[in-house]
Amino acid sequence: MPIIRVLSFAVFAMFFCCRPLSAAEIHPVVEFAADEADILASITWTIPADYHAYAHTPGDAGRPTSLEFEVAGLGSMPVWYPAGFMQRDIYDPDATVYTWQGDVTLFAMLPKDAAGKRWEAELSMLLCSNRNCVPLKKSFSGKVPAKPQHLDLATFKSMGQQAMAQMKTAASDAQGAGSLEEGAPPPPIGAAAEQGAARAGPARDKKKPQPIPELDAFDLDLSPQYIGAALEVYGLGKALLLGLLAGLLLNAMPCVLPVLTFKISGLLLMAGVSDRQKVHNLREHNLCFAAGIMTLFTILALVFGLFDLMWGQLYQSHAFLLCMLLLVFLMGLSMLGVFHLPAMDLRLDAKNSNPRLCSYLTGLVSTFLATPCSGPLLGGVLAWAFTQPLPVLMVVFWAVGLGMSLPYLVICVDPKMANILPRPGAWMLVFEQVLGFMLLGTALYLLSILPVALHFKALCALLACAICAWLWGKFCGYDAPVLRRRICGILFVGFICASFFWILAPAEKTPAWQAFTVKKFMADLGSKPMLVEFTADWCPNCKFVEASALTAKNLAALSSRYNPVLMRVDLTDPNPYAEKLLEMLGSKSIPLTALFPQGPDSLKPLVLRDIYGSDSLFDSAKKAFGKKPG
Image (cartoon, rainbow, N blue to C red):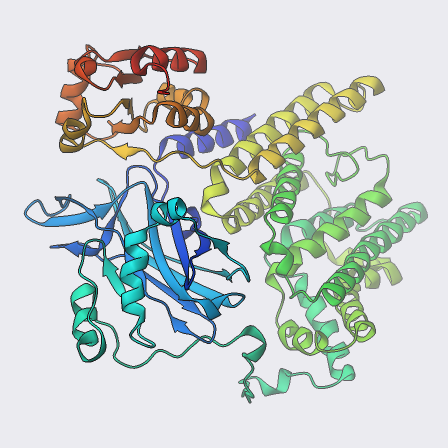
């Protein structure tokens, strides 16, 4: 089917093309520990492969990485930054810069009375590769443990004894926020503190920072002035009237329009008919559709009222978004004729065994799709309703649901209203397919709400859904045996659910790959064991090896056993030094993985060509690196 080919092309294009980075791909991990007098916070994150960040003191070019770490009631905390790795800047060969790659850890020192208080942090950096640079800002927050883990001597050293010692000196300046580079002398105390802070990092505002208040204390007596004061709601009567109008306008919102046009298709089939049974069916189906709308508004009122949620806040849940994405995508495929969607197929030629349930479920889905793009007038109505008791909130939601159901209830009262619609004909089949593409557009909108890091997995899940839908339409039609339909239905639902959980599964933390540079390679050759992988974005076999053999689990096991340097040679773009190293290994094709032993045999690397498995990787590592010492 065309839609399958189009989706397959989109998935593989996403697979081979470089995705833009976003702040969602940076996941800082904050840990706390304490000695006798202070609390040490370590902030660790992983810089994506093929990228580097400029250090806090970047050198001749680049933008410095900075971390603002504030504790409620105490203000900004001093931060210790590690020194960067010196190199020539990619975009300015005459500039010397200091950069970070892989895992980076910063430290903030907190006083003892920070225990149990909330903290907020903002990390700002510039990530660059040989293709592009991306400025990123990441905000995150949490609560300092009431009893942080006590540091013994070994742990104290591993978490940065030098950092703690230097920051303790910086903290002697009462409320100032320190900024220290590794190896820099401790800042002076008292009158010279300001000069010391200027030497240690970028100049800060001399104005004393305002401490972050506790959440309960963040309470201001504001008097907002609204531009559209006439639309503001201060009583139940106005809330019901505007809610009714807002619900009516929801029928024209872009989010819900593709689903509501299904109902128009159904009405077109009834237009101009006088048969009593068809009029009865028309009324029955519209009532079921309205019942679905009212049911969903009732559920939403209970959920929002009991759990104190905002309108549309359900779309903050990745699981909820994925459910809606898969459902809308399957509905679009159904309208395009790929398959028949059980219990919810509104195609003109559908042989639906339960049309009432079909209309009812369509009303539910229409209301779900309406929540993220609520119509005009609804903001003021809900702003007032959410401050009222639950019974009042439910009445207001019923008014909105009644407004959304009003066109269909009017046609139930006077079925002749359907005569204003165009006469049915062959054009409706084209209209049906147009609606299918509109639903696929809605699916794209839902996909765009998901974090960029989940887009590839979501596209893979949509491809799996499309394959299941095509197989169902091909082999499980209305005339297929019941047993076959049941078995295939269970298998397909299980396959789709497995894709769903695969998307939401937390990503494994991959050991940091170091980007290949001649200086780094020559420095580590012989002094450390090295695993060097040659790869490229345009190499599908390389991606297969990375997904099957060079997985996070396997690399973690190798790092634990042999502690090799993991170096990735990226041949996506021309790199003469990388290409020459590949030739020295006796190859002019990739994938290729070379294991360089430590010591005098470092010039006799063990080479794995093309596609290989986990067993080959571990056997080769044992031969090249030997057994774990001691």
